[in-house]
Amino acid sequence: MNAAIIGLPLSGKTTVFQAVTGLEPQAGDLGHERVGVVAVPDARLDVLAKMYKPKKYTEATIELTDVPGLTLLDAHGQAEARKHMPTIRQADLLVAIIRDFKNETVPAYRDRVDPTADLAELREEFLFGDLDAVTTRVEKLEKSLGKPTKTHEQEKRELTLLKKCREWLENETPLSAVLTGIEDRKMLASFGFLTEKPLIVVYNVSDDRAADGSAETPEHAVAAFSMSAATEAEIAQLDPADRPAFLEDFGLEEPARERLIRACFDALGYCAFLTAGEDEVRAWAIPKEASAVEAAGKIHTDLARGFIRAEVVAFDDLVEA
Image (cartoon, rainbow, N blue to C red; front, side, top):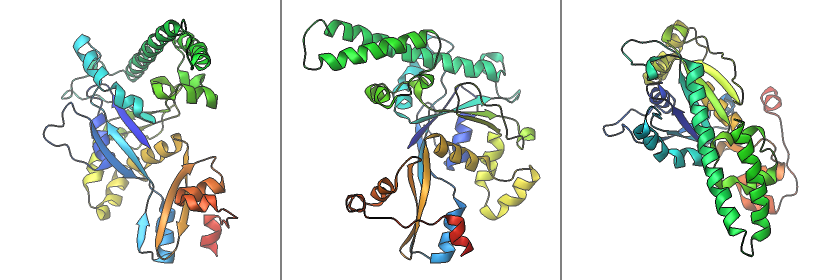
C-alpha cells in the first residue's frame, strides 16, 4: 500500500510528510523523493496486548512517498515535474496538500493563496498527463492492428476502451468516475492513470485554524479535511507524555496525522482484522470485501488452502466478556 503526497511548491507538503512519518529532512533531500512507513493507528491492539501480553505486537502499515513540489510555471518546471510522474503513477493513492494559509515569509505560488485554483491546476495536469498517455497508446494500437497478431482481439478491446477514455478525458472527466468495471480496470492497470486513483485533499491551514478539521470534499475526491502542518510537526517532535496538553491547548482531540493515516487506509479500500494470542497481537490489512478464506490466506497460504471454518468474535463482544 503506497500513498504519494503531492502538491505545488511551498504548500507545506514536506512538512506534512515530516509530521506524519516523524522523519526529519536531511541534507541533499531537496528535489528528491523520500519514503516513510507509518503504522495505522488502532487502539484495539493496545487492549488486546493488555489481555494477551504477547511476545510480539504488529500494526498494519502504509508506505508514504513525499514527491517534490510540482512546479508548473514554465517548461523547465514542467519537465522536472514529469520526472516524478512514474512514482506518482505507481502509487495506490494520491494525497494532495493544498495551501490555505497566508504567511508573508513564505512566498505564495503564482503570488496567490487560492486553494480552489491550486487544486484545479493539479487536476488539470493529471488530466493532460492521462490524455497524453492514452493518445500515445491509441496511435500505437491503430498501427499494430493493421497486421495480424496473436493478441489481435485483445488489442481491439483495449483500443475500444482507450478511445472511450480519451473522450472522457477530453471532456475533463477523471477516469475514476467512469472506469468502474473490474475487467476494464485490470486491462488498463499498467498505465497507472493519475485520474483513476483515489484522491484525498488536505488543506494546510495556519495554526490558529488547527482545530477546524473539517472541509468540504471536492468533486471526484474521496475525502478532505484541514490540518496545520506546522502545528502537527511540532506535536510529532514532542515526547508522547507531553502531547495531550499540547493538543488540548490547540483544541485538538488527536493529532491530525492519525486522522490522515486512517483516511488513507480507508480510501485504499482496506480494513483490519485482528488476531491475538501469547505469541503475537496483530492487525492484518485486507480488502474490505475479503472473505474469511481470503483473510486466512493473508496469515498463511496453507490456512486458505486447508480452510474448514473460522470462529470469529466481534471486538466489542470480546472486551465485554
